[in-house]
Amino acid sequence: MASASGNTGSPQTLIQSVSRASRILIAIAGSSNGCTSRELATRLELSVSTVHNLLRTLISEGLVERGGDHRYRLGLSAIMIADGVSAMMRAPAAYRDAVDRLAERTGEAAYLSGRSGGRITLLRGVRSAHAVRVDEIPAGYSANLHARASGKVLLAFLPAAERARIVQGMSFEKLTPNTIVTAARFEEELTRVRADEIAFDREEFLEGATGVSVPVWASGNVVAALSLHVPSARFQRLSGELLDALQEIARSISHSGSKLE
Image 1 (cartoon, rainbow, N blue to C red):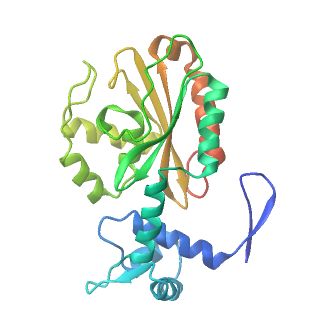
Image 2: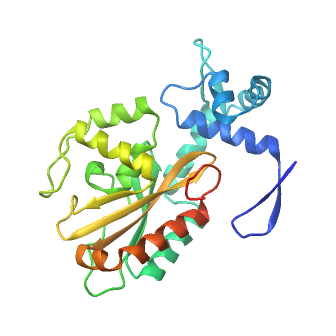
């Protein structure tokens, strides 16, 4: 067993084998074509023998399957879990609470985006408290990833092959004069997002509105994006405190792997 500090700040006892198995599942889920045991061992900094033992248990539970190419992929039981999450279309309670806290602290429109049903989707939004505000984006919205800060974050940290496949299929519709409209320019933007761990929509989605988004981390993977969407004039005036609030709250629900920590 291992002890660690949870988000509440109080010591908690964690089961090391469960933590390692969870990290394996997340790593496999984030891959475009499964993982070999050696790839998992390298990525998770575990011995190959430990990874093999954990994989055997996951296979027996139907959570992982081993293909003829010796690559491990999610099994039917894991897919049932994913389908359950998609059906609920709800983020974990801690993430939902974080969006609420961000909106309350800043007074601005706050959003949480993540993967649902195989798509990058807006999972939760809280409207701005200001009289002058950006039009609300509805839950379930999954279009125009190239023009939204949250789309940039969630695409930037995907495995390279999966990211390339999605970018290749994007239409890059020109929504405003600032919208990025080529795959090459968009890939440059994603490189910056990976380096800085923050993405901006500088009136690329909607004229007069600025978006900013940061990743939410779990076990070394980006699992969600926390965002603000603000009238540009107000963002220019309050950018420092808005970014501080966004990064602080994202840090409070992230663990294991973020530069924000």
